[in-house]
Length: 334
Image (cartoon, rainbow, N blue to C red; front, side, top):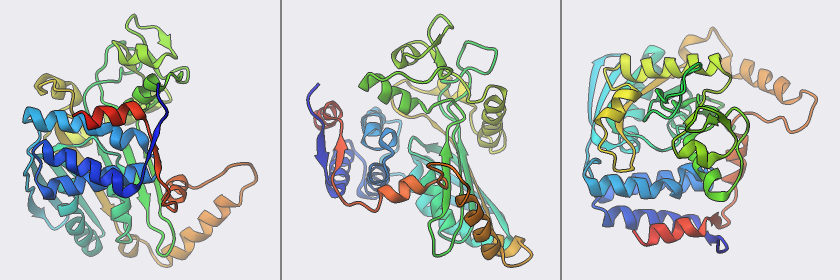
């Protein structure tokens, strides 16, 4: 394999924007998604950056993704906002709904956004971090195509079903985590397969139902497993119920049956929750939590960090980012 190449953050944005426009997206949608891809590369989340662009392009070309979507927002109650994403990109829906979600949570203490008919294949931390920017705690989850076998099964039934959470720290970096309820995100397994790396024991099964550390065997006919056995299984089930059962969208196995199989992300739902410590807490919530985080950070040991610190550290650098050369060739040839 040839040596990897380096692109500036602006070049990453421009490459994504150009390819999305060429695939039929309008400037509004292309600019929002290109920013999401750029920020993933900026923060070191390479499995959710340019790596995802070919799949987005496939779904634009197939007609699955609405290239000119303008999501429609409805206030169902003072604390519930519904968004019809019009088969468009989830980041486009987020740009519309998060300011409204924040207003509702700041007034009522808690607010929910139910996003229907969206195409979500980005990381989840951008939306919860955006919620935290309004001094709110944020939680987000979404399901996906079935890649994960429940504990005791050998057939995929759940998506990787990620959960993200952010806690606001006014004047400081928010505490933000983003995790798949699978042992690994499928994108990370695909990157490992591409780069020739093994994955940890317990990540997945091969096509015969046997444990394997070979990511290629997981991707080619195998399945992922939940992290932590029954604990991950339970959380994955919770995500299915919040993002499908609660808001009336498709469960992961139903999503597969309805998907056109173009290699791109499916159309499904997303659940967003915003909570206001300013409204809910008795008093001094910020000072109280800062003292807690200080005690946590001061514990003895090596390499202890608060969730999200690595991403914040990465984004301090404006240096060019290393991009897989084969991926760049694939993108340029699209």
